[in-house]
Length: 277
Image: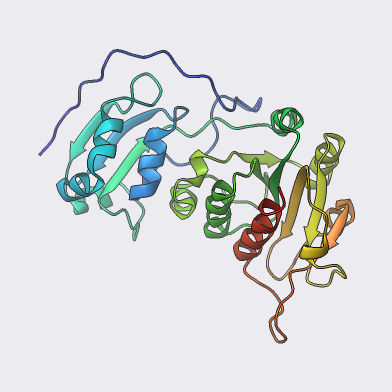
């Protein structure tokens, strides 16, 4: 069964929360998103240009009035999604990577516009407080996605990654973020040490996490603008990134446990910041 939804009259485009980075109007990423939370968040994001929604009748029923409201074009650029097609789970699987857990729904949409570091610094200066997560060569899209989800839960300003040795905003990352990619900018920088200097010049206090640090995270001052700096599991922070931090802190662990998954460490650090702000 196929149903072509007729778009309502275009609405006035809402103010943009983030603009282009100077590298083109769109960020990188694959055009298909999938999974209930991911698709609903993308449809609700006024910065997403949504084209084609594939959904099974069962998933459409389970997603309920919220999906129907978004389909009707109450949010979204130029009136929401272009077309809606009811199909089978197998029909959805055909357009997605093998093994994708799509929960009966997939969305073809343009990538999000990118936020530049300069734009982030400008917004942070105006806010006067807030936290950003800074990742040093964390390459697993599931980990980065999980950190975006946690960052959204704690109201973080951004997640900052390097242009190299970091995942693109793929459907896998978006699924792991469970809607967080729509709420927290993923900011890409060429050189992390220089980016940290720019952040510090804008008022950020950069706190690196290192299991060998003398001071615990609970003992570390974290108020105002803070950048939490985390490295990849095993390698940790690179030397120049380590030296660019204002302070180093560790998360106390039981004997015999050397480290946490990087996304879990980020969640603890974000909670520690949020309870003081």
